[in-house]
Image (tube, rainbow, N blue to C red; front, top):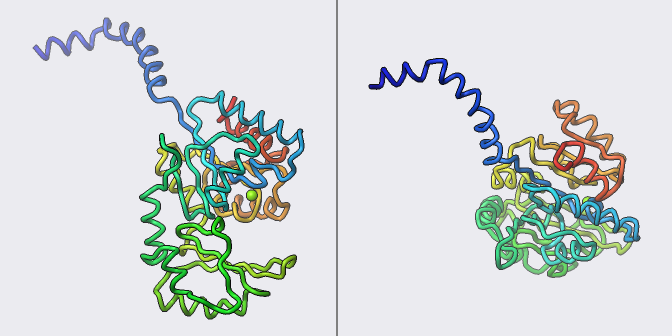
Length: 298
Ligand SMILES: [Mg+2]
């Protein structure tokens, strides 16, 4: 029986029918798995323009329209902002709600659900373990009270990001803070900077090894999009690591000149130069230009 069937199947009749059926199957396969893409973009200085004039807002609207007309393009906003400030920021310029928010410099991920944005539980677990099994609350407790060191406002704190102001430059505080963190076995990346305008120092404590690039890799795994269908857009130094992860990249026209130069050199060294697109236009218009360049948007 099988032999007879095989004979029939290997006959010219089958070849003829494959010629007829092949294109139909190919089309079916295409319809069943359309290419999905993900735009992961920084907000301030990238999709949110630094100047709020009518021209810039029109450019945002043009970007929003193009994205809305594209099927299977997911959105993630990757920002230093706290979730509430990120939502406020996108509402102000008319950007749509994304599928994901990555907030607090890559230390929190929120997913869109029917009831709003919910913290991603697997990501929380990853952050807790990167922080040495602690939460931001535990880190604050370990540091305790120090003269000249004050916690920043609530909207600048994340579940796994703790931020302080220091009186004057931050350097004199670093050793004491570090010693207390070590005593609590916290694994922390300590970032110190100084605001010359207010003469205040800024101390950011983040889980060790966590920044925007870690979060973007996580989004890639979670979204299941192919590597070449994830594009990251940004404008400044805190986007640099995410821009060198090997995904497609859009550098908006208004990006720091030093960043552009540095990326150009690094990308050649890493053999990923063709994956990085330097847009001519600034902000949202530059992002749209890049999306068209990579064929994510027609
Ligand atoms: Mg930015």
